Amino acid sequence: MNSDARMWHAHAKINLALHVTGKRLDGYHLIESLAVFTRFGDRVEIELADSDGFSVSGKYASAVPLDDCNLAVKARDALRREAGLQHTPPVFIRLEKNLPVASGVGGGSSDAAAVLRGLVRAWGLDTGDTELARIGLSLGADVPMCLAAKPLIAHGVGDEVSVVPGFPALGLVLVNPGTAVSTADIFNAIE
Image (tube, rainbow, N blue to C red; front, side):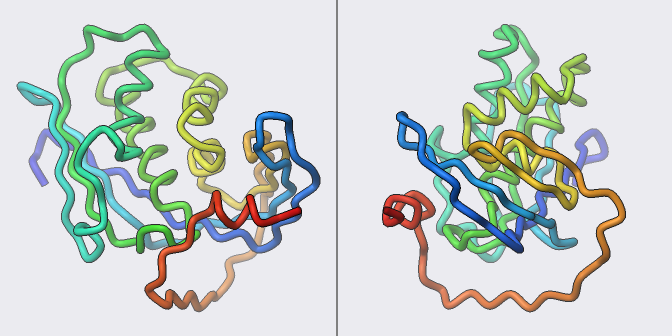
């Protein structure tokens, strides 16, 4: 890590309970979820640079798009656009991808949340949690939860978040069969 760069953790999100309570006209499902976050996950390094850049390393790097389809890159661009910050300094984002892609643990959303938190710090912004969650929601329904990154209960499409204080630590075993699972396909299969 460069001495001028900062590291941000992007923890896996685990839904301990997930209830679908309805569906909005725009197709998003309404949920109630009890979610927790692991100690492990991806890592995001952000440093000021001469030009914007993005790179990926780690066990699952080969499955990660390097263009503006990546949620980490989208998060950078959304923060600039939504906060009216077209003249912010360029940044280089390095993603260490330790979480399997399309595995249902919110890796991309957590990466986006880490980038948003990191850029607020790197750019010295005074962006509050509510505004950051609004920007995060424009990237994906899980991003507001991943911004909190604490045991929580989520309602709405995942954007209404209440932290659960004093939630006990849990020992969990997560098994990934190596098969990509589309969250959108899962939710669309619900009648």
